[in-house]
Image (cartoon, rainbow, N blue to C red; front, side):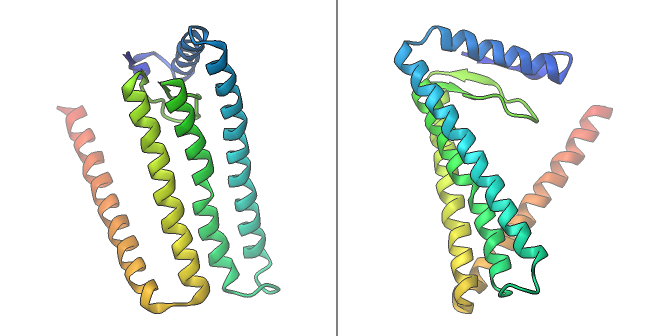
Length: 183
């Protein structure tokens, strides 16, 4: 089952529709699945708390730059970047066990509501994305902390290459959308 909620008039209507679809789907699930979903939502909130705490710590170190070792500041920001991993893992596991994606309604652009194997694949994608992000940013923090230039140089090249490609794709996509809307 797939539903496109972007075709509704407003973002608020789309969000409410997505919430109602999720609630209806949850109502059809056994109590054990609903209970597991409630626990996963608590873990997702805890994951968001980890992100907020890591941000505050990195911000504190940046503000108190005169009283901390300068190497701690970039490490704190890399740890902040890696701190999204627990939240993404919990969202992915929630989608896998619930067999519905998204298992929660987030602010911002709303995805399609899917169930079944597509939701499980989306959940595994979130878990994999989280592990890759945590490994990359954790390794980046480690190389900065040890100031290992032998490892740091290729990481910076990979990061700048990915950012450059991402920006190029985003610009081309934006241009394509503008051209296709005019024509």
